[in-house]
Image 1 (tube, helix red, strand yellow):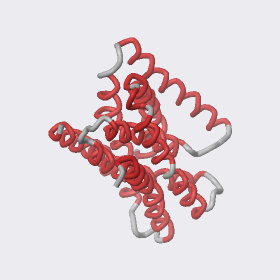
Image 2 (tube, helix red, strand yellow):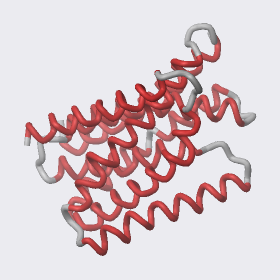
Image 3 (cartoon, helix red, strand yellow):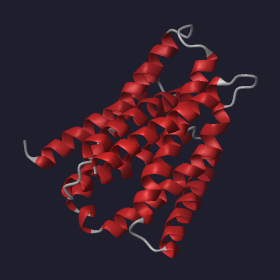
Image 4 (tube, helix red, strand yellow):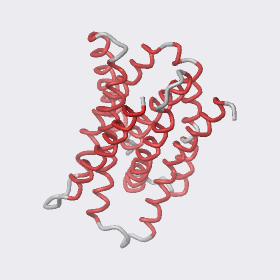
Length: 240
């Protein structure tokens, strides 16, 4: 199989984890007794931990390798400020899309990095795809829960929209394979920008939703999500 076609298929599979997580949340809505409130908060926190691991172990380390301190600071700060402004705009329009924005902010730059990894002949592409899948599942679940609780969107339409968003994966991966592999500094700036934005969204939107008084499972969910990313990062480093 042509390598570019393989990258497209791999990134599409990774993207389809978003609607898969939404379908899981849809089943939870149909059978609310299936998961307790504590386990729902665990999944929210797990997604937040996975996002933090993406920032701390993938986006920032990869970004700082290619940029100076000044451009690192500018790129990271710009991501935080831009996502803050986006959050203000969503709030003014009463749009409950914080989890979805965080999910896409994580998925798109990682898919670009996935394509660039294959173009550069690195051995981390398959592992990166697996990590994206494991991150997108809880993030799809959380984004679906947020949208159904705070909007009038029909559940089936949300799942369909997430399925369409999965197509962003191949588009981003092809962009990384063809374009960003030839400009590693631009790729680094994008990853740091996304890292700053995700960090803002985690502490502004996801972490407060995960809080549950007198319960400890949500905090353990965040630890578990971050641990997942840490293990993946260590495996990636060992295979290089």
